[in-house]
Length: 322
Image (tube, rainbow, N blue to C red; front, side):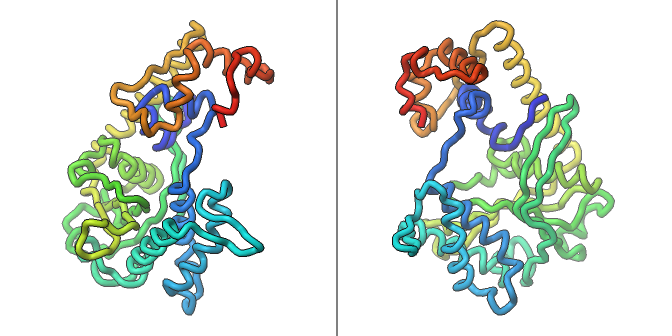
C-alpha cells in the first residue's frame, strides 16, 4: 500500500528519482528560509479567527508572527535569538508583514469582489486533515487550510444544483510570487492546480457533495500589480466526473510507484529514473545524484536497514548528506 500526499505526487511527476531520494531513501526535502517563513505565516492565518475581538488587528497579527516564528524556524534560517531577543531577517519580516496584511484584509474586510460579497468570511474549518482510500487500497492524505461557508442565495451558487454542490469555498494559502495560471486552474488534472481538486474530492467523500468553489489565495502581493493586495485564483465548480478522474489518476500513480518498488526489490536495481524535464539546478538532491551511482543507492538503503554505518563501505564523505 502506498501513502501519498499532493507533495509526493507532484515530486514523483517532476522526477521519479527525486521522489525516491526524498521519500524512499528518506533523505528528506530539507528546509529553506522561505518554507520556515511561510509556515509561520500559515500558523498566524490558522489562529487569527480565534483571537479575542479586541486583538483582531494587524498589529496583533504581526506580534503573533514574531512569537511563533522560532518554532517554525528550528534551524534558524530566518531568525536568531540574541540575549533573549528574537532578531528576524528584515527581508523575510518585510515579506511576512505584507502577506499578513493581505490575510487581515481578507478576514476582516473583503477587497476581492470577484469572489464574494462584502462581508467577513464565515470560516467553518481550519487546518482540516483528511485521508482518502483510493480504489486499489492506497491512501492520499492532506491538510486543507480553510473552508468558508458561502451564501447559498448568491448568484453563483443559485445557478448550481444544490443536490450536487455545497455552498463551501476551499481556500489554500500560498506564499511566494509563483502563481498557477488561469489556464491551469481550469483543468483539475493539471498538476499546478490538482491540489484544489484533491481537496474537493476529500470534501465529496466526507459529505457526499462537492464544494462549489476552491481557490489558491496568494498572500504575498504581486510585485507587478498596481494595487498591492493578495489575490485569489479560483477554480470553476468541479464535476463528479472530473473528481473521479483525479481519483483514478492518483490511484494509477500509486500503483506505478508500488510496481517500481516491487521490481527494485526483485532485481536489486534502482528503478526510479530521472524525470523527462527535471529542474536539477534547483533540486535539493542535485549534488547527491552526482555522488551516488545506482548501485551505491541500493547499498546505502541496505546498510540503513541493517543499521550499519556505510561511510567506510561506500567511501562517501557523509557531510554531503547533511
